[in-house]
Length: 320
Image 1 (tube, rainbow, N blue to C red):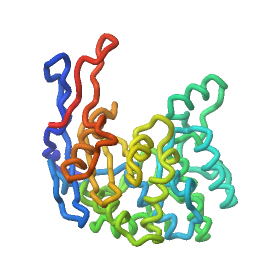
Image 2 (cartoon, rainbow, N blue to C red):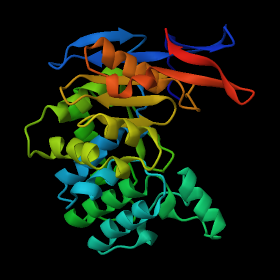
Image 3 (cartoon, rainbow, N blue to C red):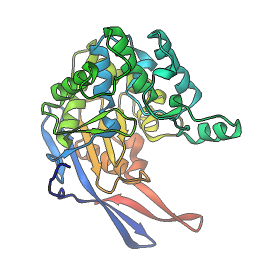
Image 4 (cartoon, helix red, strand yellow):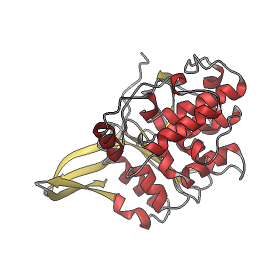
């Protein structure tokens, strides 16, 4: 176990119920100006953390660098965390089929759909769990497509020492401008590489500011153009990207969020308690974008989150 001091997280959001503060979300948030300067920072933004699924744009970049033929919705789902809807399953199957593979090659766990409507249909129709429903199946399909393009072994593609995973490490260190601090196993079984919150923001911003037509820029353009494949119906990443054209939004497990505005301003958030109900990270991220001068009017309702009680709204979650 890597021994490190507990990060000095700071209060970022408060939960107020019926006029009284009930709880506080601690964490860290960093915002970069369009030229890459740290223009907004609260908390330990230079401490290593796991980006979780917010690292998927870097993994998708590695797929393109390996020669995987991914574009449009296929590239978006490879960089996404989908809800297991029919369009997501079909897209993952298309990526696999184009690489001469089937769902049997996927190394992610079997799962049920994460999207509300998709999960309801899953149970109503008596379906069985499948690797294709797992929210990372698009990413895994893209990893396998990259391996097929390079002629690499697909049986052990999740091994941190596999050539593809080494390519992911190179992409992360290249984009983030720092060395990976630690390697872990993510929820889907893929290697998860720790960087700082600043590194995460810089990495996504580097991709945003890359020349048009480059693999780096192509990943983010696919995400903002096909948000329903990055996330899914009635999910936060999809909503934010639909309401702000050109915005890139990517949630990561355990309280992570990265937002990159079309004008280059980029924000990364880590809520220390994991933000299981997703009630803090979005408002903290949108607040940071506003502080950087980004027009957040189309998503200004996400500057607070309602607190419910007795069937009505009795309070709010707001930034501190």
